[in-house]
Amino acid sequence: MEETRTVNFRDVAENYFSDTRVDCRYTISSQHDWSSHDWIGLFKVGWLTLKDYHTFAWALAPEGYQTGTDANCSVAFYSSYLPKPGGEAYQFVYVDEHGEVSAVSSPFSFCAPRPLDELVMLEQEKNGEEQEDGDDLLLVVPKAQILQSLLEGCQRDIHELHKRFENADVEVEKEREKWMMDRDEFESVRNKMKIQIDELKDNLRQSTEKIEELEQKQKDVQNTHENMSAELNGLLAERAENHQRIRELEQEAATLTPQKQDIEAELDRMKERVKKMTAQRRDEEKEKKDLQIENQQIHTDLQTLQERLEASERSTDALRRDLSELGSMQSHSHAELHQVRLQSAQINVQLSQANLALREGQAVWAQEREALRHSAELDKDRVQKLSRELQKKEEWLQEERTEREKLEVELGNEKDCNRELRASLRALQKEQEQNQLEKQELLDHIRVLELRLDTETDAKWTEAAASPTPCIDSPPSTEEKPQQESLPELSLSVLDGEQFSSHGSTEQSQNYNENDMMQEDLEAELYSSVIADKPLLLFEHKDSLQWSY
Image (cartoon, rainbow, N blue to C red; front, top):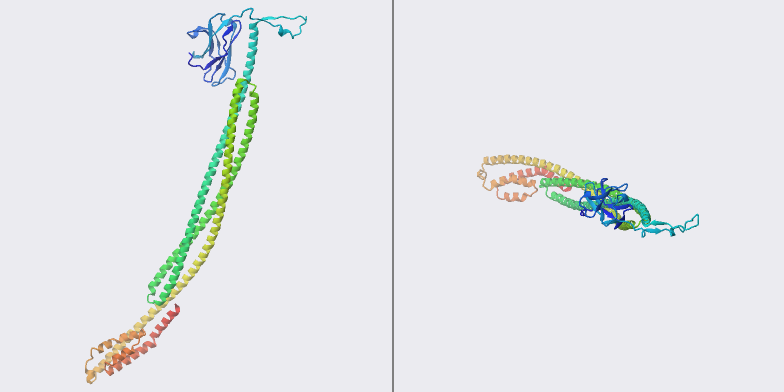
């Protein structure tokens, strides 16, 4: 029966009087499920069943009792229902609605007061009162009655104290709830600030990543600039090579066509490179615009960060004021709770612990606020550094723009040079076509002259064969035929500007005089016709080529 004790009896005396009322005091714990059918019985020690009670009373609960809380209660056993005085021991037993024993008190007995020992004279208590007849009054009353009156007064005082204590408990509970609400609000504000700090850190990390990306882009732009400068140097070298090739073209007029094709291919490559450079310049302008937009976004993010920091400082000031109000209210509650006895002392200890926890929370909050302020200052410094770096990058981009404009001017000059080269190449091509036409006409004229020479030589030979001289009748030697066949070669050598007189003189010493004279006349005619017409044009063409280059 003593295993479960959800109810405890308190202030149980060893002896009670059968002629007076007996008050049974007990405490209901939060684990007990109280019901209006719970009852307290007066049993003899050694009872076996719940039906062995001497008398009982319904277990009452105080007004406003809520299940799950502790409560101090009391019931009265009146003298008419109490057992007679004797040496038998009794005890209180608390029984719930299910018939299970929840608590058993310590044993006690009932006795009767002795007449002489229990009488008290109240002479001293009446000395201060005014008597009508002026005589002293000696009042003899039973001691039990005095004790009963004192007990009732003490019970009333205790009841008042209980009420005050309950009111204090209610106020303390309200203060505790308010403190819990303030603490929850403080925790929520602190969590919000932590979230804001995390967001600020994320924004700072994102800004650093953006800055790193901008630096990477800057490096890429610098690399592209270096590549462009290298390509420009290559173009200049190619330009020099082109000039060298043009000089070589002046020297090698026969190989002009393949070199022209190579130059056109190089011009096409230069066009493609110029297109690529223009496309890269457009991409760089787009990247610069993107960098400006990202810079504006970073400035707006910094402004929002500053506004959030100001809001957090305002919230900290509000929390500080709330904490000061809580401290003042707590001190006021301490002044009221000191009037309660032992129970109020325990509550004061709890409140002091709560105050210590609040101070610790304030200290922690102050440290966190200082850390936040320090981190905000660091963020501001870093943002200023980033703004300075962005300004430097803008200046660098301006310099890059000026250099790009210079490169564009140089590219325009290169384009003009290319146009001039194209015009000169076209002129060379036209002159080459004209030379080819003139050369073809010259070859046709040479063929005509050769045909005439062949017909005239045939006629001469026929005339010589018809003449009666023995030297003429003799057939021509084998040395004369190569001489006759060399006449077209001599005519071609005249076109090339070679000397043929020495060659003709060596051949004349070995032939007949008549044949030599005939050949000299024919060669003179051919030479005069060639020199008078076509070769002079050829020489003028060569002069014009030299003048054009």
